[in-house]
Image (cartoon, rainbow over the protein chains, first blue to last red):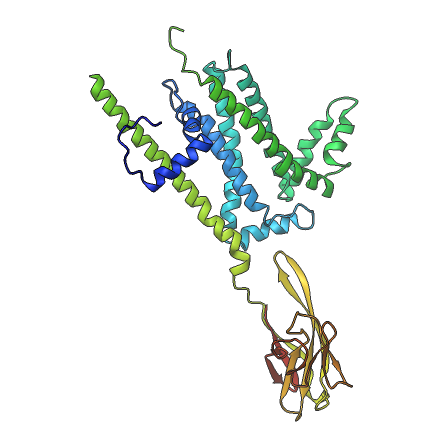
Length: 230
Length: 164
């Protein structure tokens, strides 16, 4: 760092950055995480970053929605009506969350297809692939648990049908179904636990797994698209 | 293509792409960030017009010089919930013509005051405050007289204006 033989008057910003860098290792972080060397790739290789940014957008808009939304049968629908009609830009924040959810599922799925068809799941990236597979499932859990929260007819009946799938296995099916719904029918208990799953358990698991996924990507690096003669 | 020109081109391309990333990131932040501010503050700053004129009772029913308490309640919008606002309004007249209507909320710390005939004043039990028959502070810590409702008389009925 101290290679410059002629001491020059440093700007205030540069001094501050130097102070921070000396303690937090900012340059090291920059070089290993953001400015790391990558092979020549194409636009399909941006799907992972796109997934992460869409996920962050879902997180931020979701946190905003919790400021008004109440997960209870007598308030859920009305509180969303309030968001849509009374709150400034409520329609926009909810709209981004609603359409962003669909877009996230599509982008994550395309990301998986790209990884599969370009053979990026092979040694030494099996763990990245496995965590990615769990992340895809986690995104689907988010989508499914969020679907019930508006508590309208579509939400209710779609979740009724969706949870019924869990009751399909022989012997343990009916018990599993009762556990997932928190009782025989979809009701207040179901709404509350789906909300808990949607804003705490699933996102916490997703964030933790994204860190593992990113760590592996940074540690191993990304693949180049396979060549014709490979 | 010489090495020199290619490296020159690389810098241009890199700058161009990071510029695009910056613009897109800025756009997304603006599109979400600015509406988010409105989203967060809107219930506090939106003007809600829930004011109404509430009839209390006939002016003729008042005894001059003796405040009469009128309990009232009304439905108000509380976000997406309809809730009930309750209170007591003290109407007092001295000449049978003009009427003053006081809120029963103490101006010190919002306790409820009651008319006390012996003390000839509105008594607040929280800190022994006393307001006179015209709402003025007689004793205790209140910083200002009792608040008054805007009033009007229609067909001999006292009406007060309730705001949000």
